[in-house]
Amino acid sequence: MDMYGNKAGSYPQKLLVTALEIALIIISAMIMFGPWGTTLADLIGWTQPASAPTRRYLILAFSVIILIRMVFTMFYLMKRNLPWSEAFTVPFAFALYYVGFAVLVLPATSPLGIIDYLAIALFLIGCYLNTGSELQRHRFKQLPENKGKLFTGGLFAWSMHINFFGDLLWVAAYAIITQNIWSALIVLLLLSLFAFFNVPKLDEYLAERYSDEFPDYAARTKKLIPLVW
Image (cartoon, rainbow, N blue to C red; front, side):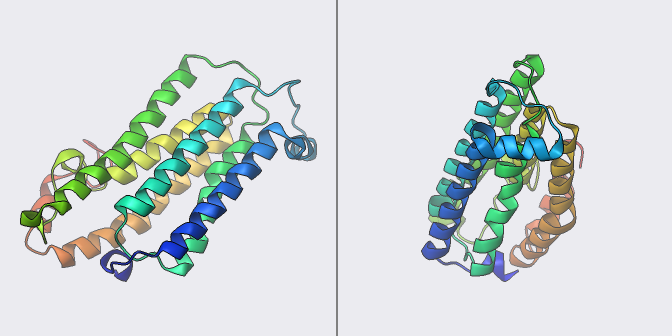
């Protein structure tokens, strides 16, 4: 509850998160394009291609885009307090994406196909749903007449947690690009985290903060996945 309600700049914590995530992306690059990947592949028993396939560059591009979005969200959109405990744990969670997918893509050798191009589209849609919805809410909150009001319009009219749904889409896109069935576990882990922790915790806060508006919004709007749940 306090995590969502307290307002603070938390700039030292945000700088730490940024530094750790940059370090994770460097590690992922060393895995996909440097000697670390060869060592890991040999340990696991995967056959390495003679040169790095295009899909590895795509995984790296995904990670850089996610980092840019994360920095924009933290320093421009995020108004709540970012505790030190979260500043240390968030990068470790993102290690699943930056490093986990970098490892899982190692045995993939095939060129990009139609499924991969669809995954790129899925990634872009997911990024838009997440950052676009947050921007819409930010602009709503900036208007003095909306002070203390719950934002239920824009993309949030399709899902109460459309930003989380966007996260699911771009993570699923990562998984598709790796061509590794084990990548599905990361998507399922994120879905479980949202369904059983983040969504209930945030709903509890919203129900308390916006007691007059939240019940009607919750009754008419899907919780996470538009048109489904």
